[in-house]
Length: 243
Picture: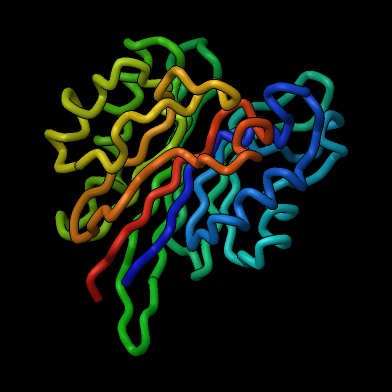
């Protein structure tokens, strides 16, 4: 079964160039790529800057993605909050939040859910992880150590298809060889630059897979809207899961 998954720091649907709140640009770009799974970071809820929208529902309703998981990681001083979201064409279950905050640094977290993808009479469990890691190298290392020791991950069978994605802020690509690859993960992307969106120079966003899942392609969007809809470009993975 072929699947399209997108990870994207949507920057509250505020453009990286014009700094305007334009959720319709994010929605149009996502609709163009027709994903089965979305793993989004910096998704607003109840914030003045984003017209008090609950963006996970705004995006989900527009794309017809009824199954959603959202968890707040940061609360704004003037009201509102933002966090990470997973949207899926199939129902989500066994949902978890993993607190990745280190000391007094900015709050960070990961969200996790399973889903059952369907192809004809066949179904297959897929595990989804969406993360937004910190800015310091030592912080990111500790955060991944927490993730790898978490109950939701340790309980997965080694052949279960796992999609692990997000804004990892891993500029030099060290997290894969040091921590994720020893745990059985394979990098889906080629460390393609995704930030800043208008002239990408830094590969901050990543997708990894584990278990019975094949990567057919993984790239940053080259659609014109990808330059302006956020300050990151979305990373799109074309996957195949045997059923």
